[in-house]
Figure 1 (cartoon, one colour):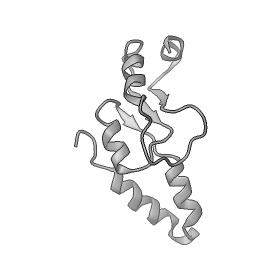
Figure 2 (cartoon, rainbow, N blue to C red; figure 1 turned 45 degrees about the vertical axis):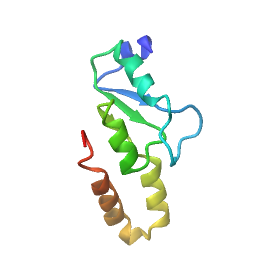
Figure 3 (cartoon, rainbow, N blue to C red; figure 1 turned 90 degrees about the vertical axis):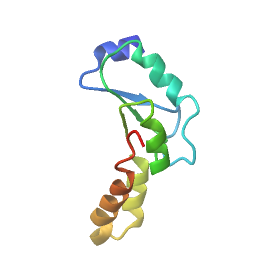
Length: 103
C-alpha cells in the first residue's frame, strides 16, 4: 500500500475486492478498512471501485472514501440498451447516483 500511495498522482484508486469486477449486490465488507489503512500512507483523495454498482453502494462509500467508481453497471446498461437510447439511459443512471455524498 505504501508503494502504491507513494507512486500515485492525483488520486489513489482503491480496488474494493479481489477477483472479478462486475455488478455486485453488496459492497465488499472490508472496503472501509482498506480505505482507512490506505489513508495512513497518502493525503491524496481515495477513489473506491470494483463492486460499486448502485446508489446505495455510492452512499455507503461516500462515508469513508472521497469518490466511487461505478464501471461495470454502466457497461452492462450500455450493452442491454438500444444504441440510440444508451446515452440517455447512462445519463439517467448516473443522475440517480448523484447527490449521495454525505447523505
